[in-house]
Length: 121
Picture 1 (cartoon, rainbow, N blue to C red):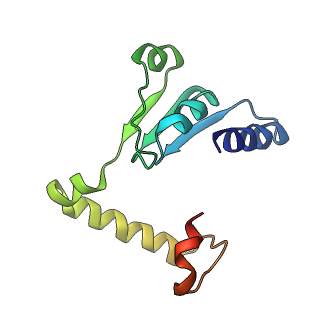
Picture 2 (cartoon, rainbow, N blue to C red):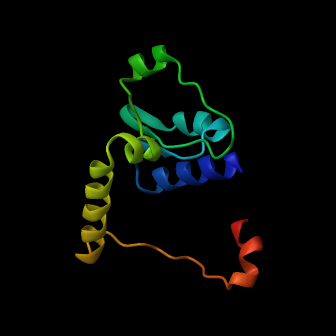
């Protein structure tokens, strides 16, 4: 699966004559995080939000330094506990962007409730 994702990204970049990726949104971690970091431009930003793979990646500090990467972590639960107003304001703003048509949600497939078990694959 990792090969498919990175190959797909490489093909996308090549088709648009781009050298690499400026922002990596990583909800997965694990091997996929390691592989996709190879696609990052110098000065890229990495947003870590979770570890769906079950494996927490390690980003060596020397690589962060040499590549001038910025690493952001976002843990939703912490905001719910320590700064709920920030989280509520952010969600309100996000919804307002959707209402104004500034962002849209792409729904690729829909499934009946009886088919939900197989829909995650």
